[in-house]
Amino acid sequence: MRRRAVLVSLPLALALVSACSVFEETTPPDEALASAQETFVDAGTVAFDLKQSAIPKGRNGVSAASGSGIIDATTPKFRGQVTGVINGNSAGVEIIAVDTKTWMSFFTEDFNPVDMADLGAPNPAEFFRAGSGVDQILATTTDAEAGDRVRDGKTVLQEYTGTVPAEDIQRLFNLGETATEFDVTYGIEPESGELRAVTINGDFYKEKPTTFALALKDYGKDVEITAPK
Image (cartoon, rainbow, N blue to C red):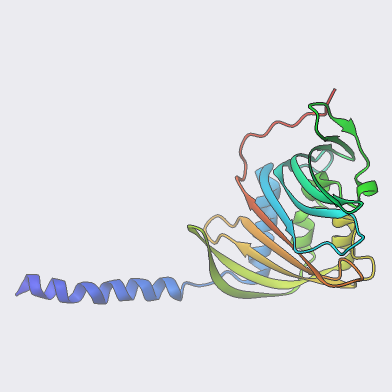
């Protein structure tokens, strides 16, 4: 009889556990964003993957980028692959960025200096400049609201939505000069407080609204980036 009672109560216990996870308390938006900002800066390094929904015809720009960044207020760094459209042609290059200087390797092992603005692209190191990079987008988000919990592979993220002043996006992307603000959605891993996903939507181009999606991972892992000799 006792064994039968245990078996009968097991589904009920599982249901209660499931219900508790569903109704788990969500961290308030301002607190979650502030924690994510601090966690990002304190990590020192992070890997990221950036994708753009579309580049209008006749425009130069970055369609995708992936690599690693060193987060620092004075000397942020980036190294990775950048795919973009230059004069109507799509090309993938390797980029090293140290502070305000950038170098590009294109069909060669050598890196040569390049001005990313000439390519219609941002300096990727600026995303990792503490105080004005990704962390600043979190800091200046207004009207933040908690959304749903969503699954990203094996990880469950808590979503938060809000708006960001255009100047913070313009500074990072060198785009959006006609916009006044951008809509943003964050995906934050509840236990670690890590920012894992950022989606920014708005008038990056005057032709039509565009979306940039940024994925972040590997917080605090060893990364070495040096300027080419």
